[in-house]
Length: 362
Image 1 (cartoon, one colour):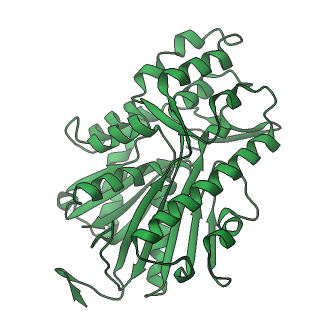
Image 2: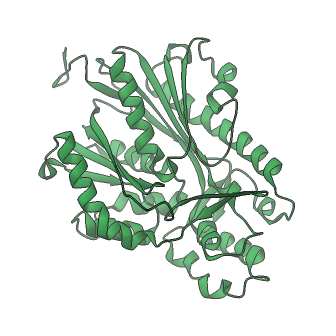
């Protein structure tokens, strides 16, 4: 098949659309600092020493599933956090997925496989099952819920969707990454990790529709997925993850991520590209998960990019904060709107500790 300058084979997977969504409550960074001071300031004497993170994180605002005063409650345990997660995640799933289906000119009952990526709450039945009747998915749709990928979830989830589309050319795969990071804000645990988390994280979702062997004009345009890969570093379980207790999930940041990224990520990305058969000098743009201002700077260094190159990353971080897995897809959405270059490589780091990459041909 030949269309719009592309020679398309049955094994070519096209990104038919990419759409994003956020919850209704917008929180400025200055208001987030006030809330954190109320949460931590009275019983954590080091709070004022750590408080500058709210001004250095590179964030102006973010979106939350609950109004600000909800996070100040002293009665938040598993039931309250889970209820907020389910309500917020379901709403964002429907919003992002509906937008992606409309952009792909696709009805919900045309979707053959759904990949749902989420690590910030527990949902059994999983999210796509909970929204199936409202969305209009078929009874025989294949469901692939994925937990535990964290900030790498957007890239890894898209990689999984790509492989599933490859396995059944012509089938349509919907991938939804949805994270409700703010339900894990822990005022009951006055620690550096929790203060940093409250300065960084927000809630959001992104959805993509993929199909092998078909090229369609949409928000994805003629974008094809060329390949994907991952790198897992040994003995790094302590860098990022969840601690589980009787009140909920608690964030783990036991090692500084920016210096690790600066020292390790560049070589890992080069190795993944080599295995994919993508020459490093053929990459026109690297789209990174913007985990924080210092992480972005570290990535520019390790990837041998001029400082300031990751402009969309900084703007997404400023406007939405770190939404975990979906965040890099917000970056790609802006790149698509501006005109995706010939080859873009998405990359994100996540628990494990790991790095995931995916190559897009524009």
